[in-house]
Length: 198
Image (tube, rainbow, N blue to C red):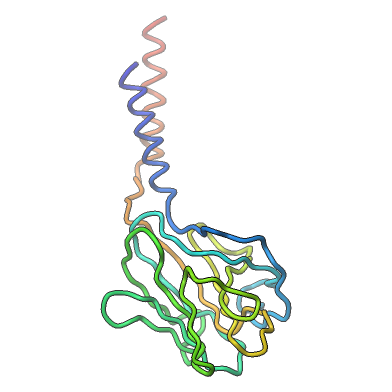
């Protein structure tokens, strides 16, 4: 019986470890977004978003993919890592060009830059309706995947389509490929143990 309890506890731990990844902390209430210009690229309308800070719960690999932009200002995205920052620019190919890096747990270090007005906002800094980034409410987003829209300093239109990226994360914690098989084996083990008692 002790072996069965230990095995079940181990399975629970492995399941919880594989469920970790990206999360939004200090998330504010959802707010409405109007005039979002990239809806076809995101296969659905974007009508809301939320402010917050992107954290990695565990170490892993993060990838930011350029989705597109709808702005007269020049903007840029940078993933801040050791060495030169990894950048995405408006001249990149939407849905194709990406930057990727291994990161530790904690604050994900990225920034959006409005090159025209020479303003920068980093992950963790307070965004406002006039300037900053928001996590877009995209129904097609998968677990550990977030769409992030930047609103540059032009007129404070708050449409969050001035530069859009998608963040994807793969945990460094290995997900046991044989977990379903292990569950079946433990079930049979438990069934056999209960039959021996009869």
